[in-house]
Amino acid sequence: MENFELFGNTEKAQNFLDSIKSGKFLFSLVMSYTETCEIPGITFAGADKDSIKFTPPADAEYLYYGYCKTIDKIPMTPDGKPTPGLLTKTALESASIPHITINAGSKIPPKLPFIDTGMSFGKNISIQDAMTDSEVSHAVDYGRIVGRSLASLTDCLIVGESIPGGTTTSLAVLRAFGYDAKVSSSIPNNPVELKNQIVTSALKRIDSDHPYSVISKVGDPMIPFVAGMLSSASEVSKVMLAGGTQMTAILAFASKIGFNDENTAIGTTSYITSDESANFKNLISKIADIPAFAIDPGLKNSQFPGLKAFSDGFAKEGVGAGGSIISSMIKTGNNSQKFLELAEKEYRRLFTLQ
Image (cartoon, rainbow, N blue to C red; front, side):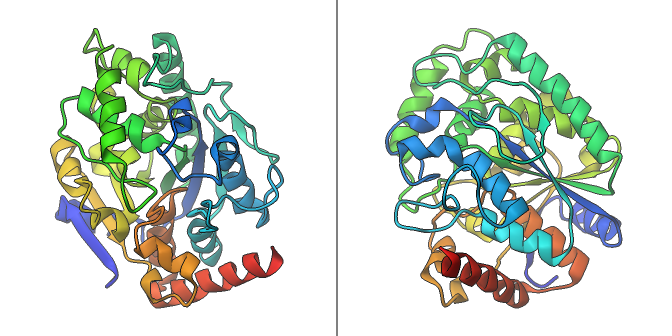
C-alpha cells in the first residue's frame, strides 16, 4: 500500500489493515445539517446560501443514481468544482462496496430509501444552542442502535458524513473539550478568523462540562449520532471513520461515552493531513490511541481542473472520500494511478452529461 500514510498508533494501524484485507466492507453516509453553515463565508458546500441545505441529500442521491433528484446537478462550488462524493462513488463502485444512507438531521430528505432517525437539524451555534440535552441523548441512543445493526452485517463499517459547516461545529466541540484544535476548511483560504469568532461566542454559553451538555450547546446532530454508532459498532466489527476534522470531534465525544479503540481507525485524504491551517495528526494522538490512515488519490496529476482542485485545497475531504478510497484500495489492490483513471472517467461522464 505504497500510497498510504500511517500515523497515530502505527502498530495498531498495520494490525487494522491486516484484519480487514480479506473482509467485507459496508459504507454508511450520515446526512445532517447545522444552520451554522448559513453564516456567510463559512463554507463552499453548495453553489449559494439557499442551495446548501440540498447538499446532503444530493450527495446521497448521487452515490446511488449517479445523478441527483433533489437538485438538477451534483453538489458543487460556485465555480463548478464537484462534491468529494465523486471520489467516494468512484471508490465504492470500483470495489463493489455496498452503501446505505442515514438521515440524522438533514433539513431535506433524499429521494431514495434511507434509515430515518427522525432527528432535527442543528441550530446556528453563533446565536443559540445547537440542540437540547434530550436531543443529544436521543442521537447517541439512535446511533448505538444503527451502529450495532450495521456492524453485524460487515467486517468493517465505514462511516462518512455530509454536513455543510461541520468543521466549525467540530472546532467548537474540540475546544470545549479542552483541545487546542485547528481545523480544515472546504476552501484553500480557511476562514480561520471567522470560525474562531463563532466558536468563541458559542463557548461563552457553556455552563456545564457534562459531555451531552457541551454537544447540545456548540455541536451538531451528526457528532453524537456517529459517536453512538462508533460506541456500539466497534464492539462488533472494525470501524473506519471516513473523514477529517469532524471525525476528530466525534472521537473526542466518543472517548467520553466509550468505544473500543482496538477496532477503530480514521481514514482520510492526504489533503487533510498536509493542511497547514489544521493540526489533524496531532489532534488524533492527543484524543485517543488509535491508528489513522491518509491516502493521496493522485488528483494533482489530473487533466481536469475540477479534480486537480482537490489537491490545491478545495473540499479536501467529505462524503467519506478518504476512508472509501482506502477501503477500495485494500479490497482491489488498486493504486492511486488506477484510482485517478477511474475518477477521471466518472468526471468525464458527469460533465459530458451536464
